[in-house]
Length: 100
Image 1 (cartoon, rainbow, N blue to C red):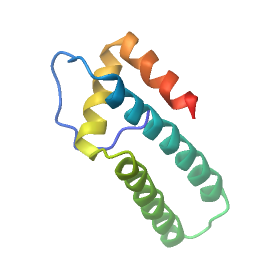
Image 2: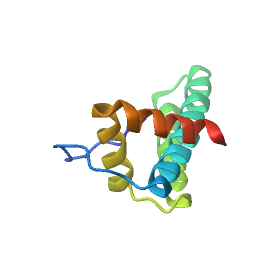
Image 3: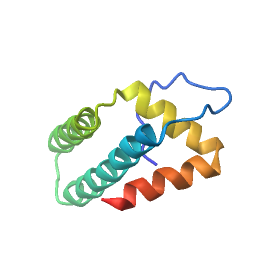
Image 4: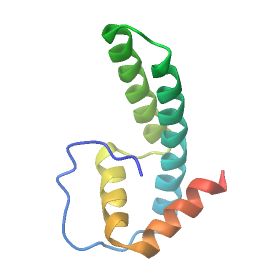
């Protein structure tokens, strides 16, 4: 799952509400689409400047996807990090990501 840097979260995975899991799952799905589009577009660019600009646009789109779900980067990272340690939470996120 896509994760933003600067997480700083660790420790035991807390329980997350269905609403939070649904929001993060939808964001995961949207960010995966953004990442896929970015990677396809990246193949067509030659200059480092163009690649960097595309990367910045992709990151802005990902942040917009989070904001659209009412999530901060920190909240998103917290849930995604917890899902890395909790297979049940990971399955809940994937189900929410695929629901849209």
